Length: 470
Figure 1 (cartoon, helix red, strand yellow):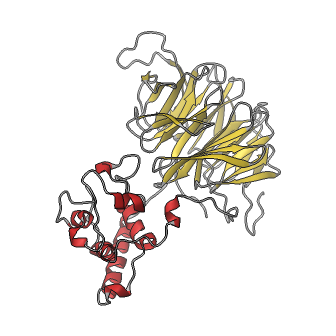
Figure 2 (cartoon, helix red, strand yellow):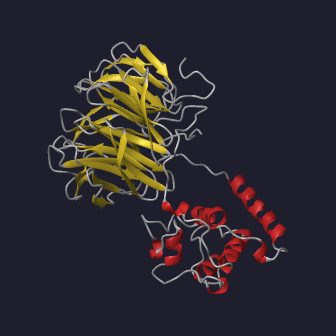
Figure 3 (cartoon, helix red, strand yellow):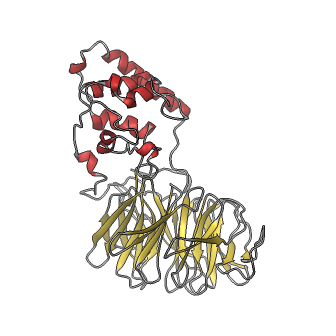
């Protein structure tokens, strides 16, 4: 299976024509079945009911928001009801609040602010309630499962996350429901670490190099943080959080905490050793797409689609300030390895270097923390990287090139040209002698950062009936 999406914040498109076709199919099925006795057609919660509720209801009634006190993402939540009590009465659809709100007989009509459910879908829900509102299998309610065997690929999946181990031995890359551990030159896969998440959006090592921390999830279903022991190749912890993908995944300098952003606009910090959520804050007004810690680990900077780079106390979650002048949506942030400077970029195509500490009192429309504005790129920015010593930066996105600049002067020193549009991940080797680029086309390209020469170009995953490298 290949994940198809155009950008980090656009991964699912449902054309109106598809919706019309879906409604038509349901109506045809309804016509074919209404003449049959109800008992003759058993309704499956897993196959018939759950897809309807997931598509039309769980966006508002899920653990992250739980409007009306309802969690409709799982069977137990449906049967538990919400603030106004039970929503279903098994065997009696006419007395079930859920059915009444879907038909408009009970106010407010649901789904709120959306088109009413097709009659055929409501009929299926009624029949399920009439039959006792039973769950046909609890296996599906145990949450996302780890695959037994590694995925088989025809094409490499898009790559959002990659990182080197601190000693430069390994290059770790996100796949589909797995993490691939390569030798740093890409010539050998050392391990395939299978997990629950369809997407891995961020990868980091703890400073001691012993632990891989992966952030991701499955869109519109769950967010996850995976903790892996690199030596034993075993997952020591899976932290399921939110009802959508997590992003960022910055590890604190002491290796004890992980900070991630969410599509639910939240920023969360977890303790790596226990999985305990230290805090959750909602300072942002839109998706939070990337996170970094300050050098001392006492502050984090988070960015997202609300245009702000927000400085937060990493111990309490208290909001400190916006360190940038708001311009446009931000998709990437990196911290200078030796200073409390952060590099941000996004929709307006310009990389900005900011100080985390404001040199004077904040004023309206103040951009006093700005250190440098680099040249405008050809397209929006999705990925940024500092060289290990902080002397250079690399910029990637929807352009067909990755330029490298001097941090202090803003001068472009070289350009990586043999890349395709859609660069979602960039990482310098810890020694600084190579830089790895990946993204939409799923291929891994390793360059010499000084000359721009392409050193290697390969698929990070084994491909069925195809040669993995050129």
